[in-house]
Amino acid sequence: MGLCKQCEEFDVRQLLCGSAAQEPDATGNTDRNFVDTKDYRAAVPYFYKHYDKINALKIFADQGCELCHLFWCTWAKTLKKDDINEEFLDKYFPGQLFIGCSSWKTSRQGFPYVTLTQQTPTGGSRTLCSFEAFANRDDVPTEGESLLGRAVYPDSASKACMSVVEEWLRICLREHKECSPLCKPASPLPTRVINVGDKDSDPRLLTSNGKIEPWIALSYCWGGDSQFVFNDKTMDNLQKGIPLNSFPATLRDAVIITRSLGIRYIWIDALCIKQDSAEDWAREAAKMREVYSGAVLTVVAANSPSTNSGIFSQRISGERATLEWRDSMNSRTIPVQLRPGSELWDHALSRSPLMSRGWTLQEGLLSLRTVSYGAQQMIWECPCYQADEGGRITKATEDYRPKAFIQNLIRIQKTQLMKPPLFLEKLNLRSSKPEKWWKSYAIADPYDKWNDIAEQFMCRSLTKDFDVLPALSGLARVF
Ligand SMILES: [Zn+2]
Ligand SMILES: [Zn+2]
Image (cartoon, rainbow, N blue to C red; front, top):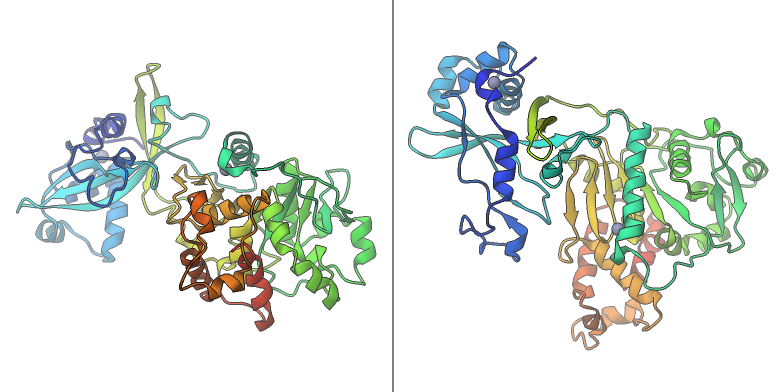
């Protein structure tokens, strides 16, 4: 496959770099909803002239042009109509086609979309579809660093994909000031943890005795009827060690991730809380907050409906078109691809099996860092930003991201400089709000934030009614 002449001459580098070079207020739109004009990048005012009618896309797609094919398929799909012919297109969608790009906010959206736009005979314009330009992680043009997305790996179990998580963690630990605790990170291990072992030794249950070591926490759906839990019957075997291939897939994958990050311990509720002891359960569930907020990273099995379904997945990639980025820095061309702009919007993540479970709201929010394994890609979140495997980085803004807010509160509390009143007392004080202790830390009003969180929580179902109190208690204590 190659490109038709019209597509061959389209210069994606010029379009994106031209847009990035624009003054933020170039379109005069900046005062609309944009708090910070430096954050806003206007789209370039010029467009690349493509074919004069949509039917041409269909013709050149049939002749093997990759870009026409991507444009045509992506747009035609939106019509939900089988027999689209030339007559129909000329009648309902007449007009010249252009390739342009969107404006974007550097903090929220990361980079511009490449758009296919049609100028209608009456002088109006309509965007037919939009695309993300992306490069392979190991070959990103220097000029395109912050303008291009990144390719998503076909298999999330692959070494290459795992190294993305390693890199996120490394950057966060080394470079993010806002992600390190204000005082020395000296969290002792949870009461019990799984020592993940290595290729020569099996994972086994360990009583930690307050040893200070980093650990991973797992957030996942139980589901299924797994008998693979810690109780009187299984205690001996768990303590001696159980071969990794006997683990249910979700827990097995979590151990693999932990090993590959070079961390020795993981906390998994089913294996670290004694499931046949109401006493143990009550005691350990009360410590959940410390388990998740103290973990170096929480692995979120966002796409796993049960303990047996596993965390890793094969990603299905849709249509692509390969273009050349003519890099002006080192006079060589680097392959850059386009994918439909909606492909990686992982709405699946918020609708995933895990997100419907009440517990996971607090698990995710209390964790300093989370890596979520969605169906299409992985998503990293720490107080500094949310980054996805596809390359988008959304910076933390206090208004929209509960994680940064909660983590800020946890950090402050860990300094022991001040003790916020108990949550219940604070609820009673709600109307008068006399103590604005949080103001001096430049954080938003926690009452408002609490409402948001409680609302999100109500939308999630809990498996058992009695889960409600422990599930919310970890969060409430932060307030
Ligand atoms: Zn073409
Ligand atoms: Zn960070």
